[in-house]
Length: 115
Image (tube, rainbow, N blue to C red):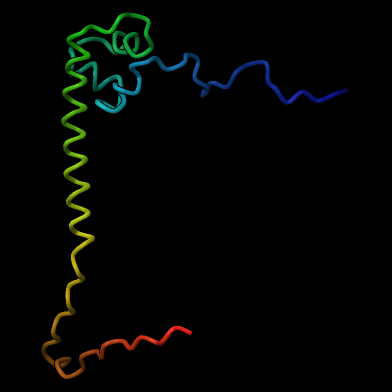
């Protein structure tokens, strides 16, 4: 008897509905349907319908999504620039030892010549 690896019933974790054209915008702007529903003061089902193209996305919602993503992009670029400046700085010199350790500073490491 041949073995069939394909199951008849789909997994409960498998997506049943393909994401709509606005799904990524909602995910980037809010992360979850509940957060978007709280922001727009509508039900989570309304957000789900907008995300999965079951109902037309209102223009005012699209404009707000654009503003939120523009603000997020500005924050991401600022954080990226800050990290770039941090990585470009030279490392801080070691602290001077104090107390009983004052005379026992480490000697700088000698680099071996590469063969």
